[in-house]
View (cartoon, rainbow, N blue to C red):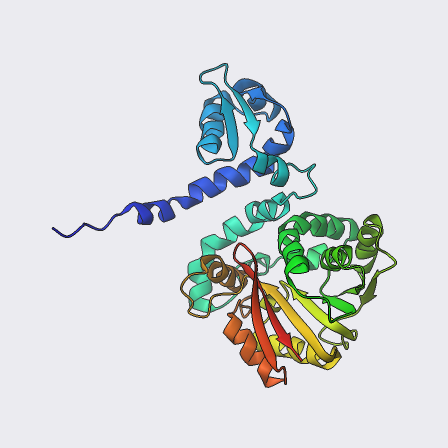
Length: 341
């Protein structure tokens, strides 16, 4: 008798927003930060988070079952503690905190994804602009402290890929790097930290430059990591042996993607390399689920923006004269598409 299909995957996917909201709420409450290195009973932790008694055990035990908390013992006297992963990535006091992106998912994207059907039918963004409000980035760039806080929160999400890139890419033939849309200068810092012969420049809008200078100075790398400001759609890019774009190309439509690639080709020295760090979709568009979902998120956020495959990147780069290409897997769903001039 033929084996019957299993409905489990359907139900697991359909109900996955339950588990997502539990984790995002725990981050919003600062649960992992509150715990730190401590062990607390359910009532004690619930009191610190100002939770009603009804949901305490269901909430904390769900996080245990999902692998985000540890529990020692059973019953009212049991104590909850952080997992090793939680201490590293979900405690706001950790330098590797990734909760910034989770906070944004909870505050913004969770509700915007409710309008995915409208995005698919209209091709239009479903973010704040749909409701006549200023977009998130327009609000952020208007106020330096808020912009600095946001960019600091996002560093955890980017750090893993930038560290992997700094480790895996062969920098031996090169001396200079310019990171386009460099934000806090994190990519430049990670490269300079591991490769003493490299001099790096973080390029972004003028509002961002003081944030980058502060972060670079805190890393003790101001002598080899500098900053430059400008608009990468209006101004020429700084000349360098390596030009990087971390999660930049997917923010734009095809015309603007091609503009950025062409600008990079013009700014690179002979033999130089353009590196696009993205959740590159696999060429067959069958296996990198996160990359495909990220592309849908770009539809919800920006309309025409989209993620792409390594083959797409190779094709666009070939159009402007790049000669050789490779894809370097970094971490998780992310890779570096590399085009050599």
